[in-house]
Amino acid sequence: MKERLGFLPPLPNRAIWVHAVSVGEVGASEPLIREIKQKYPSKPIVLSTTTETGRKVAEKNLKKWVERMFYFPLDYPWVIFRVFCGWRPSIIILMETEIWPNLITFSHFFGIPVILANGRLSYPAYRRYRMGKVLLKPFLKKINLFLVQTEKDKNLFLSLGADPQKIKVVGNTKFDRLIKGEIKEIPLPPDSSYPVICAGSTHPGEEEVVLHAFSKVKKEFPSARLILVPRHPERKREVEELLKKEGINYILRSEVKEKLWESDVLLVDTVGELYSFYSSAHLAILGGTFVPVGGHNPLEPLSLKVPVFYGPYIFNFEEIFSIIEGKGAIKVGKENLPETLLSWIRDKRRLEEEGRKGYALLEEYKGAVKRHLEEIEKICAGLLAG
Image: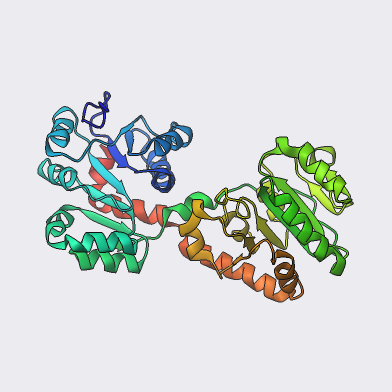
């Protein structure tokens, strides 16, 4: 509560202040913070969040790059004035949809540039802002730079009164964060093994769904192979019991280095190899989406031209899925997963084309962080270096 009232911990002067409300915004800020710190290692960066969950994620993922973290002060004039009386950042970066009138007003008064990064406007947020457009417009005029995700976002900000000279469409930084992974050398299956399916980051209740679908595929395609990668390797025994119960022959990754494809199922009980196994597959099934977990990284397989089949529970990555759906990513219910897989597997060219579509989409979206930094440097080069 002290921090929310403007009594902040000791903060380095002339720091870059990044504000990210919660988990999603923290995730979007991560690659940008990392890029700035790598290019300007002596420049201190501080991060504020609004929610406790956002703070926990930031502490887990950003400690290496951020000097201090604190809760965002309440946007009251006397609170914000207290903050700036005791501390002066050099640049303020607000992530996504953070328009705080008093923060923007006092920043403008003290000559501190304010940048809206990874900017976006959902239609519900736009409708709320539009109701107060006359009051909002003066504050938008004080923002130095809008770096937005799409042309749609640009047009919505413009309709609210933002200066068209200050808006740049630069893409979504989350794509740069989520396309990651290092391919380790893994022997590929023999040419006769088609299809190879990789079910990544599965949770309790999902292995049954995947194995049921795989058994249907196996009847029509006897050479099919399944790479099964539970999200938590410590569940190995639990998944083994399920495989034995279903009478499916399998082999543990930890027990074999080269002859990986001698059983129908390769059960991966090691860590750090999922990306490499995606590269060995013809298609991926994304775990965490067939039970209410909220999904995992859908972009790793797409970055390898491997199409992704996923279930209805995608709330952790809803924005990402709205972009990739139908472009390398196929939504399917667990009841019709077997039939859907078979319909795609029967047409190998179609499957490969879907993988290429997903890869092309990622190529289009990649590089948002670099474009962000280039635009920030145009107006804040001296402040970044100093």
